[in-house]
Length: 155
Image (tube, rainbow, N blue to C red; front, side, top):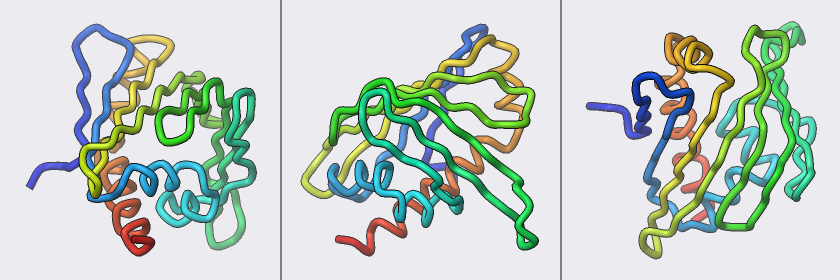
């Protein structure tokens, strides 16, 4: 069975279009991206900061069992429209990847289903291709599967 999270990467472009349909009402899908306790559950990371507003910032961190930081990311929220869209920057700290721009759009399909569309813009085609060479698609699909499981319990 293929991945439920679809990634479209056109040749010679520096962006990705990611789409996923969820068996969740729109409000619950959006909540999964803005409530720190839910983000922590489905992303498996600690939310250090999540200011859901224009010019707000966010910071996530993952540590190993010994407390060593293994992943840290941060960014600034440029646009925040509840139940509709979030535009933000995303920067993985201590990696060779430059900051990227993310456009997240949330769409109601039915009363019980919704769709997330993400456009991610990278600094260059090479940076985008470098990201795609990692297990990015599988990791994102696994995270979205956890999102579906965790948030379904709120219905």
